[in-house]
Image (cartoon, rainbow, N blue to C red; front, side, top):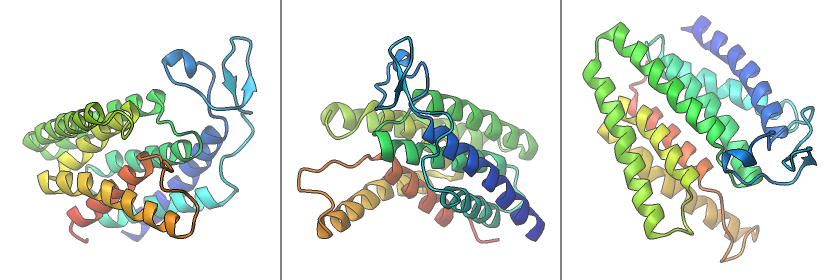
Length: 235
């Protein structure tokens, strides 16, 4: 177990460094063409504004160390399980999405879409190894349920949730559904709890006003992480 945790921590350092560079270079060329509105940055000939590819989003080595710790904790919690690669991939994706959403209020399709495909393939591989095809089916159902639930909320309150949040819900539902319906429900609820707690803290320290808006993606990811931690028995 010690070797596994150490290897995953080293992998987390590499992933964290890559995520830091990718987030620092966002918005990427072609982002607006994909139907996403980029934030400020350098201009390209096509009119799409992109940041410098040499920039990092967070001062080194903060994000790299945090990602390494997240990977190590994931390995420590799941152990040498067949589904560990899927959850490590989700952790790396979550780091990148969190930084981008905090900086640009955007969850890029070019991250969420491939992450969903990778998660589905890795969980299918885990089901192939373990023979738990029913669990894979529950993961697919979890993705559909959480996507539909967030879509309904977004339609009821267009200013509260964006389509990026809805798509992220599908990705999180896939992984939480793999762990069970209790984990899925906990992850969905904890996202709102984390968002509310963060808003109260920021209001108390006067970092935002009563009409201030916070990106919801990071809270969804933290809530899902807490649900994963609670759903998996300690090894």
